[in-house]
Amino acid sequence: MAHLILDALHLKDSLSPEDYNPQLFQRTEIEQRLSVLLQTPIPLEMKEVCTFQKRIRKYTDQIFTFLYYTDVPPDNNGSERAIRNIKVKQKVSGQFKTQRGAIIYAIIRSVTDTCIKNGQNILSAFQTIAKLQPE
Image 1 (cartoon, helix red, strand yellow):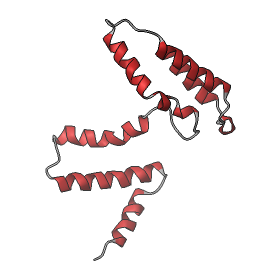
Image 2: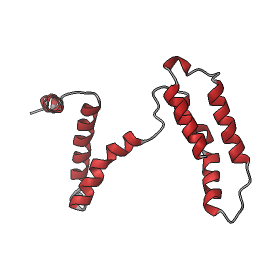
Image 3: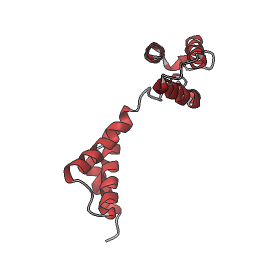
Image 4: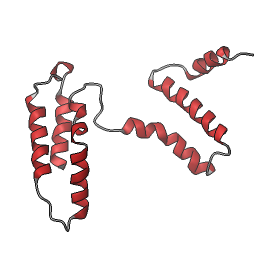
């Protein structure tokens, strides 16, 4: 399975935007290899592997989505980075004091992260938002 995932990642790296069409031989070959792996019987005493195989079967259609769309990343690193600040805040202060405080923090963090992703000035964004608020 590890070799299959690595091969899929290498294929993703080698694809140009024009290569994402329905008839890509390499992608079909990777999906067929996955199908063979999922058909392979696993001894019952290997419970963790059986559980893993069952989960992969359930999500087979989503595993190689990144090979169909150029803008879909093969990992969830962006999502993990997005929640890192909240987890650090929880770890440092232990918790949010109020529900309202947590919501306000989430809104501020969301605006900040969106500005960073889009290469925008964070202060300008908050100034624009402040101008929209009724006095």
